[in-house]
Length: 192
Image (tube, rainbow, N blue to C red; front, top):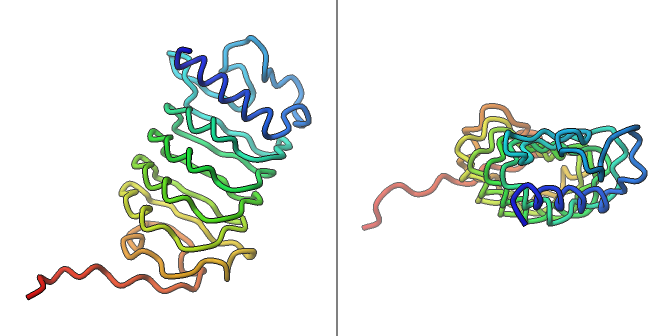
């Protein structure tokens, strides 16, 4: 299977996992033989690889399938509302991703540490979900990250531990609303 065919298979898996037959968009072209950039919410590059998947307000209803992690040329991913379940760790394979917005869904569980693999990421919005647990230290590997949103009235008390110190450098965030302390900065003094 060539890369463009693999992208098509990943989108078909996404369609099936999120109730695509019930989406409230007419003539969306999903599952057709048309090129993928004719499918609603999909943008491709010159090689036919999916670079953007932007679906909001279309009636998504289901979980993100792990196959979405095979869209390795994806730069922008925005899905809401209607996504539920956990964030699949396979999203950590989307190493070209610069924009990830999964806000306003019903995501549960912890933020997968694999998201720390997204070294091109500049914008991350996981707010207005039901996420819990510790904020992964691996997110500090996202050195390009400028915008980070995690807050939700549902999860205000569900995050535990402390906020990794390096995330203090993010230009815009809602970390202060989480009411968690920043972790102590790493000890930079040599031990004698």
